[in-house]
Image 1 (cartoon, rainbow, N blue to C red):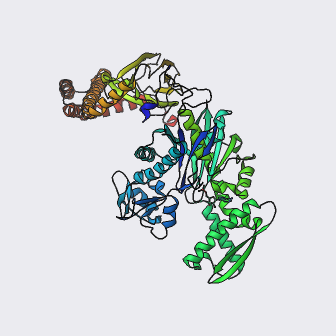
Image 2: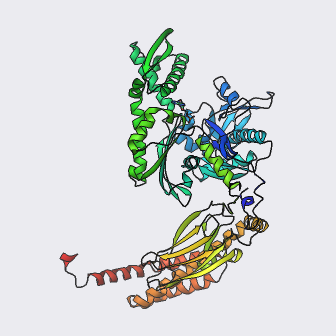
Image 3: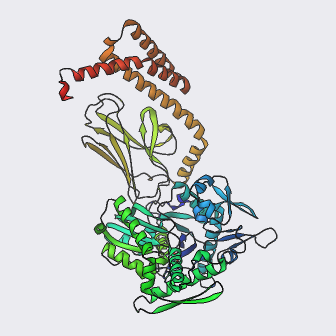
Length: 632
Ligand code: AMP
């Protein structure tokens, strides 16, 4: 759990006491686990020496041993037992059945997807299985592999997720890890992990591209490196484009070349499967012989007759050119999204087995005008980068330095009107981070803003911990609500918080530095969290009351100023009616019934509508006075 990762200055663990931390690439088709050993990251093999674990889980009916198979065994049984063998479960993580149906994902899967608690589930002989549970089986298998390798318990794991994963998908991944008994040190984005594996985080600041072409998907991400931290600037790609499409294109080309007048669609399921497997073999063999001009023979059966076609690398390039072009079109799109030119890219990282293809490397090289990074195994690079990060987070850096804080243990925010807390940095946000929110003034002509920085999960300032107070002065006088004041919370890698408030129009600025975690023990943090869970309901009511009172006051203030400026527009009766509504609201504001206050505010708002219309007419008339029609 994240709270355990916090270490106060002076409590750095003994550097000789190494903690075992692993990186896990939890992939759609397969997963890997890696760790830094003797200073070098490497993928950990299973007992048979295989580093890859197919991300497949098969559930067995009653009385069949342990009830499930995981990895290669499950994969081997997929054809025979498709309904109980779950592959590609990553596509279901954190997704509701309706979303999957809308995207057409549910229909593509060989098993039955049903509604489940919080997200879709898979119906199997062993009952409905949540994607979280299925992913937990895969993660636990990798955890045991690592524990067997080191003959020790794991301190924690860094798990990678696609850059485009939303909060629900990330949370589902964390839940799966917890279920698998893993302490999640951090979730990191897959492209970020790949960049870390190449040590780019140690290099010069700038913008990098990650080109990830796997078996079935293509992702491209643009990362910006600042002060050793990557930020994803843009992502793009094609979720239905990968190495499998190259196999299909080559198979189709070979059939055409044979002159038999058949296409893959005319073949039986068995012949088609054999042809595609053969096309894949030829593709991979040609990757190795691109330069030599050698041919590779594709041998298969078409309608029971043997067929052999000699294929050169140039043929393969022709047959698949359109696919490679599609990936490059996505690259151009994502650069446009990030408002960058290809010349802004400082380096290109290649990820995924399909980036072994020379045609792909050539297209990337030509587009960016530089050699892409390919010397690490493209299937392993994400897991390797995650392992490097895990090793750092576990405090195993060669210089013995431990990252003091890697998540914000309690939310950070500021006090707003009525003693309410507006959270700006939610708890568990990884650091370093910078988050901003815009605020405005409450009163007409207000030229200063008092900022009160607080920490905690409760809605009322009184129940949170006060960290600092400062003031922003020199705001030009404006009507209430017209000023735009951007408050930015920046937390650096050492957990140092800087809060900046800046009035956007004039640029006047004030700032303060705070050390947010200082002085809070793990027990205190745990107690504050416990408190916030226990009092959530009470807090909601208190917040509603305060919000209703603030709104009432705002309404009363606005009506007072309007009456002072344009009260002469009203006749005696109209004025008396408004005064009555104001008195009623002032009285309601003293009550503790949020509903009653809201009703009185609403009544005043409605009752002053005709007055507002009169004021509007007057100001339009004033604006037009003395103007020539042609100037308008
Ligand atoms: P991944 O999902 O990243 O494991 O990618 C697997 C894809 O990489 C499959 O389509 C493989 O055919 C492809 N692949 C693996 N090795 C090679 C290679 N040497 N040449 C071309 N494609 C390869």
